[in-house]
Image (cartoon, rainbow, N blue to C red; front, side, top):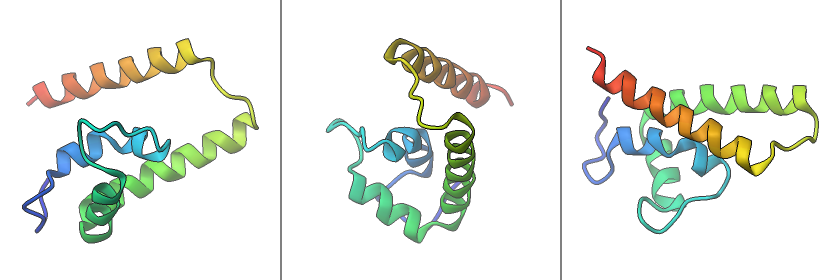
Length: 91
């Protein structure tokens, strides 16, 4: 996926969308403002972001105010990363 933004890679933006949602970005990668600006300017990334946002909001409504324990959250994020790696390796 690509867009007109030569400074920010779409794959990197989409890879970090979950930590972007949670405002848990670290200093080793794109800043919140850089990701937000990219999403505002890149229709393919914005579409993917919106799908993720809608799914997340539906889950939040279904689960109420319950928060996942930290260890479960880490396991889920690790599994998501494993699936992403598998998807990038699959032709």
